[in-house]
Length: 237
Length: 234
Image 1 (cartoon, rainbow over the protein chains, first blue to last red):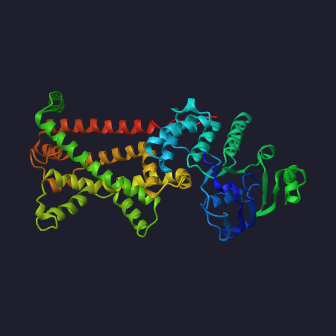
Image 2: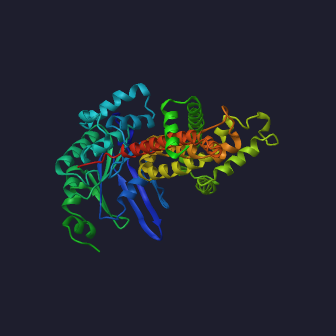
Image 3: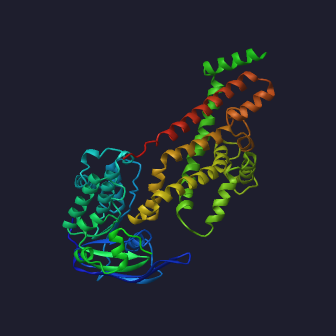
């Protein structure tokens, strides 16, 4: 994977507001995504994390506020919490995605095989996607996103429904992708996973950024009451 | 001729592949399969576009397609007759009372069925795959192509439903075809004619073939509906 120029740029979100049916789902969220880091978005359900990822991906526009990229908008790819795969084999799913991404026909086969190897799914290449396990489906969805050669990979709770072994495989894959130069933004409720993966944390609460900073400091000394309650497993109203 | 003799005559005609019967069945299949092919060429992309695109007049088209699913064959036949008759806009083409006119009439009859059912199939698939395809940056046509391929089993069922409707209808082909012997006589019009003439053996033989085709089509529909039953585990 090419090492992107974006790794040197800070992405800034300022005052993001998104309202639907009179409710502010994002209510002035501002944060930075520092260069070359794995950023973990945390926060209770309904805090606006998945919404934020969709906004960064460009699927949604904020009612107000803006995201600045520090230059040219990077190539982004979003992996959804529940992978949506086509009713065909694992390899055919990748070939389809590569066609959509504009990869030349001759190069698609080799690239699909590379991606399958990266996901450790070579032995499942000809298996129908519907009969892959949850972990295999998620790994396939992640490498499918990599087919677009994104500079910024957005992962929405990629291990939410997986057992510890499948989770470990996903985390290893995420680290491999990050090591190859792709910036990562990951949403998770798993505090252990956040501690293992995060270089930087953005903590959201009720549509606002309650706290943001380096992961080490966040987990050792959370500054906001919302983050302290969340990390301690206490209810916060 | 009592009822048993009639059945025996019908069986003999089918068993011996009677030349008249084979000709009539062959023309029926040619007309109806051609109409299904044309209706699919129009209805599949149109239905998919109605499901995935937003454009002025979309709502009217959806209501129109849904309403025309119940279009009486004689009305479709009458409309095509008016277009193809000597005084009609397409009169100079001389198509009235030809198999081509019958294909046009059946295409008019089943295109709304294919369009409306395709729209529903693709709309359901778009709920599941639409966001993922947008994330991947699929263009409008790439999205439509993906969804049509993804719904291929269900859409095969749609085409078979159209074929069943085309093979079974009598009013449209009677009006624009004229039921001319060796030219435009198909199974349904022949059954009507032979029954009125008291030639029940041929009518029953044709009816038997029509029933066999209906069963085969339903078996095909059932097979297509069973195919995508694989489900995720773990």
